[in-house]
Image (cartoon, rainbow, N blue to C red; front, side):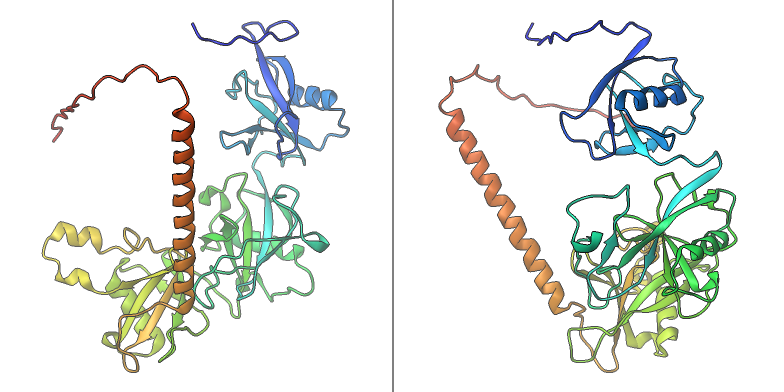
Length: 409
């Protein structure tokens, strides 16, 4: 009762067949999908050939991807000899015909970007798999500018697309850097791979650091959608497995501003503790540890969270052990984070914020107020229209609900 049935031309698929949608490219527009019925025992290779024939596309430089729940291109269907049933393809799924031949088994096809920390608005050169929005003149794709602390390389980033690199999963990070150097132009020359720092690209900015040069890529568990960016360095760098790279900024005395970022390498072999980090920063700045204050910057909130040795005052051992780790809440410290440093010899106050932080918070506040007013208007309009309709069946009175959970200790 109440179901809607649709009358469609053609025979219905049998129990051994799949009804699929398919389209060309990853930019799927509503109503552009085509339909096809195939056997669930058909291989990926044969399915690809059939869809290319249906689409009228020549050549063999194509591969299939399954659309994910976000309506985006998911992982490629790499096992060409596997059947659609074995890959859990179901009726109603959408397959995408994507240009570009898949690398052979055991290889990765990695888009490589050039990452130049700076204080200007980032630009992205167009990439065939990342064509979002409208292009600016000259075919350059402009990334959204995100405001951070002054001089914060993760607040404003500049990434330039160099090209795609096909590399074995058994290759090391050093070999990845060495092969990626062949993609760089004469304007971006570095003496050796040791003058490069490799990051994954997450959310159009550097994400995870590939720190150990001799470690194979397969141990980093890089997916087939992983992208890499290379950061040039002024001197050689050979990071250990427990080294963490932080961007430090010294507070300018008497000003609500910071000096440009300077990288700091912190050996976390003795633990991710606040005391260990403060000791490293104090040594880095040639200051007594009791004469500095440090704070982590959260650019998405425009906030600075002071990092002090508060854990030494805690008496409960479990609580101390749990909180004395900067990787956990509330700091979630990781590679590439910005650390503000205040010299208490020349400035003794608790304020780490800048004028840009004030502006960013005010902008966020105005956006939140705007959303609330739109929501209130929508609810008001909904009440207005609902009042003209016939009143529905009265709801039953609410009853209390009790949930009893047993003890599993």
